[in-house]
Length: 297
Image 1 (tube, rainbow, N blue to C red):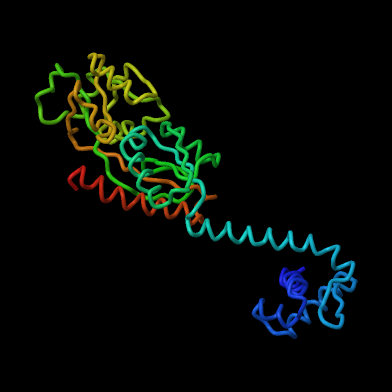
Image 2: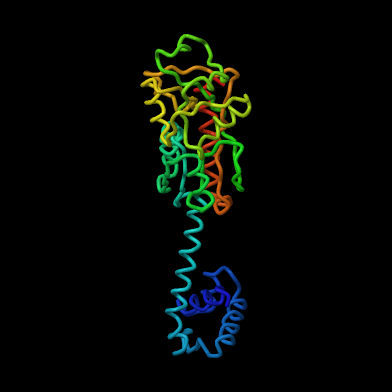
């Protein structure tokens, strides 16, 4: 049944007049009368009685009136909720990010976004590339930071290039050289990420036909830096991750130069969300303004 008929019935009972009900609803008297007749036919009972001075509900009308008012109240709450979500006044964003983005980008991004949208709840899950792909595939996050290209079957947005750098101990033979040749990796003890998260280095090695001498693997990016500090080997890590963390190691540009492409994926269930799209639009703006300035692009 149409809610318009319920609204007409409730308005007539409240105003005790079809004329006044029509005015409150912004329609004609005949339209209100027609909706009341249709509702009575659908329910199979008389709902209103006209006495000498006013219109009052019948016993049947009085009995169903509380339920009709509950329905109209619920409809109003639903419309209000939708309006608030469209206006970005409330909602939730679930984000998955790898370490470098979680540490160097997201604190400022979240802080600034919530200054404009203080009632938006944001949850952050921190993991490696493999974790983020799994979270996206199982709909555990709405937005996931990735490196491109990605095998994920969802909308993906390119954000920024991030140079990949060689990470060396302070007394490494190449400590005073300008660049570190990728070809030398096969002659060094290499400290890398687990197989499921080593996309960047695997791509570099394949492109340069290099077989690395992998001596240690770990899931923790900062554990790699600590191991390099102790002279256990060398590694290749993104510049964003190394920001502010290179005091006890030396970083060198690779020869040939290498990079990763940071992007963001939007889950298929969240792609149509005004809130998620607004966040991703702001994300692109923030990265363009801040990461370009940091990298000198």
